[in-house]
Image (cartoon, rainbow, N blue to C red):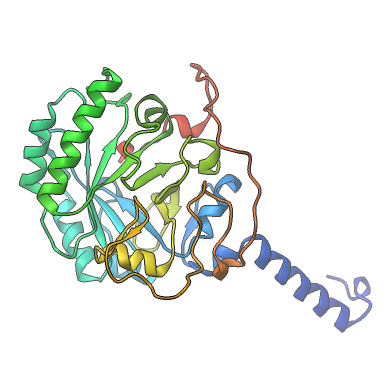
Length: 321
């Protein structure tokens, strides 16, 4: 920049400092995980990037993973694909499961549901392949419509809920832990709206705050991008945020805090905590991120879907992995 553009060195330094402060307020979350990124970031999910506790979900499609680098980047948890339907085991599951533990990353297994297989068959397959590790995170049941698979037919809401309840019961009996439910916008609207509210929900929205996509008062995990970049993983990876505080995360891991019901089951803190309120996603960033107050419209129904819908949230899923 030509010298004549600045009246003095003091003015230049002052302008630089002001710009730095302004950037820190606009994107305070970047300081939490400076080594992580996004190949196609969306402003609508900025609130998720401000959450203190963040992690990833992975499968065979992430290939060979350098878990030491993943850990060094600040990854706090990993959901790892284990099983699908009643006869598929992710070929990288055992290695990823062992390596995540070796490098001290809390990890949980997820099962992808096939609606054309019986719940009984899928529970049997889950019990055969998902480990009963005492230190593992609670398992995840991934429920979506299978628009891009061989099992494309939709079943009734009543039958879907019956199968989900049977598989949740099987997972809980097998692991001793209350499962997390992963879902996307379409399936939630068709089947899960108003159901299973005592379970933790892991919701997908990559282009807007969850409160604008789901008729649900609260959430526990938010999959906010499928184009994340994390050292140790080649190419895109899903990134996720946990709703609460360090104490709540630790309490959940130890089985002392039910994040779905928001209830302590022993070891409840004896002093007031500055934790996010049980309200729709995105109302307040954590204090560590500046405590920025945000204003969003109340939760609403999803716009009518059309064949030409361009909303990325309508099509992407964990299933793509």
